[in-house]
Amino acid sequence: MWGSSFSILSYPSPNFTASLLVPAATLRSGTSLPVNLHPKPYTSDTPFAPEVVKAVDSLQYEFRAVDDLVARNSAKVLKAFQNVRLGSHHFGGSTGYGHDEAGGREALDNAFAEIVGAESAIVRSQFFSGTHAITCALFALLRPGDELLAVAGAPYDTLEEVIGKRDSQGLGSLKDFGVEYREVPLAEDGGLDWEKLASALKPQTKCALIQRSCGYSWRQSLSVDEIGKAIRLIKMQNPDCLVMVDNCYGEFVETTEPPSVGADLIAGSLIKNPGGTLAPCGGYVAGRAKWVKAAAARLSAPGLGVDMGSTPGDIMRTFFQGLFLSPQMVGEAVKGMILIAEVMQSKGYKVQPLPRAPRHDTVQQSSICHFAKLLQNSKVHCHQINKKK
Ligand SMILES: Cc1ncc(COP(=O)(O)O)c(C=O)c1O
Image (tube, rainbow, N blue to C red; front, side):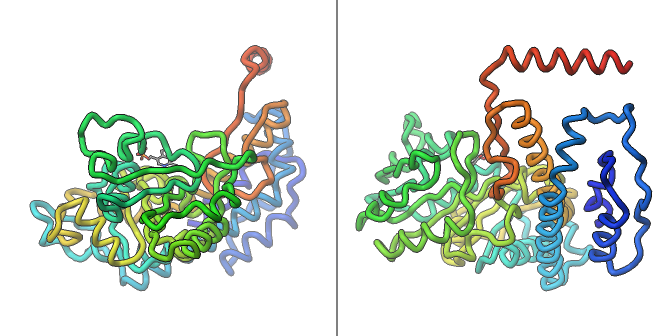
């Protein structure tokens, strides 16, 4: 496990010194690990472009902070696995109705709930995607005559047909079932509009939807602290309003998750962060037990809930292993994004977030407005590669 947390050791850097590397190794393991005390000096045949080498050198503080994040979240996952007494018998899966499985499904649900600070969770291969898990959560919380309020501007576009913002052609959107919808647009800086949010709730607002990640929009992603502040503001106006957080791309980017700041439900995809690159499918809903149960009834059927659903083959093993690896994979992604932001910014491209800004999701945006400039740059880069050959 720790091997890959030393991944920065493989970056070619003229400035790495033994004093920088040794404490990192001893701090983490408490035992002596085979650490490369004499990294090779920078040579011109490095596979990395000089801009990348320079950026890596300037980002040591940020990379170290990511290592800390990974260690904290990995410890949290391990603790949860210990608490559910995870064993190899849990990896077996099941077929048919899924009644006869060996406790892996329940162990995974309980471990996941503990990791995200929730009362309960349902983690299943039968969730097709993030959109599907979010849909089950929304249909669990809303009934005809209720209002859904999106408080972070327009939600991710696959939700438009779910909500009925875009015509779902009578296929059963929330609007088809008589659920009203409203949005609080984002503020000019791309963050939450706190002033508007302070008076946005109506008595019929039954559910507030908060999208944690920017997704593919040029807007700010929300920190867990900001989500907590928004939840307090929502509940102050209408204590009966439930808060559902679209957690896609946010998992393990911070050390806490939205249920620990009051979210009633969160939902996301195992094909993103919490699958740790190993889960081949699936998603989750977590939060307050009553509402997780209701979301489970949307996924399966009322009365079947969490107790059915086969998981054939190797899927349970990949779910557990993926969850175990997820903090590390998220950490690697965050380091990669910081690096890309630094290099792209040094080339004059607009990036969001900025390289040294706090991270709240695994999305890095860069605006490549000047296509000609990109082509020009790539020509230079190709030319350099060709020259080296
Ligand atoms: C913020 C956000 N929410 C929801 C989704 C939908 O997830 P999926 O593509 O798994 O349905 C995405 C997808 O990228 C996303 O970025």
